[in-house]
Image (cartoon, rainbow, N blue to C red; front, side, top):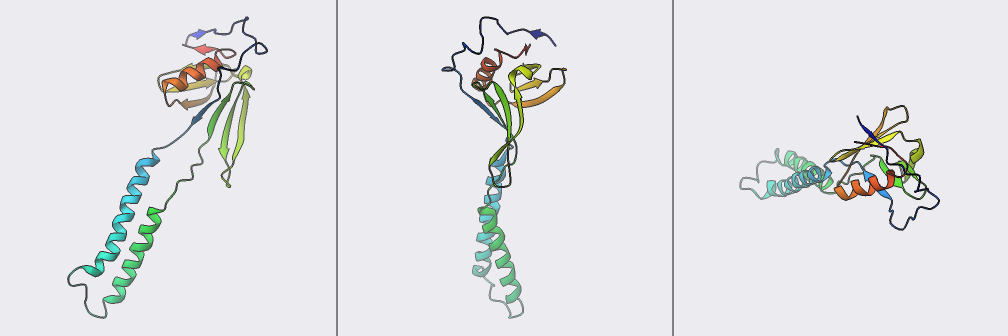
Length: 172
């Protein structure tokens, strides 16, 4: 691992202009869109099945089958509606890079859905950062890996590199 020192003595934090710096938020997300589409498709199928079970030819069978069909159609309807109305409450943390306070905060939602800070580190207390194509690795002062964060785009990578380059060593 090669270290590149990007700290300059000319750029002090007291003289730094923050007009061009924006906070960077990095989120951890699973592929919930595909799961939601699949759940809604199965839910719609179950609802249609619940009603079509009564419309099919031969649906008027004996009295002993009628209660079983009623229970099955009610179960299909309830499960189908619950799959259609499912909503994901994601509890994965978010990493928030603040250029004004010069710190990284890891925020996690509590049971009420409100974000709480679970980790707060100053940029000066970080040992270094290594940028790759789609992720950034932040290292502690002792060289151990502190966190590995996925980057959504090259713009987020450039904005984060611009923030961290003033006070954190960027590894090549």
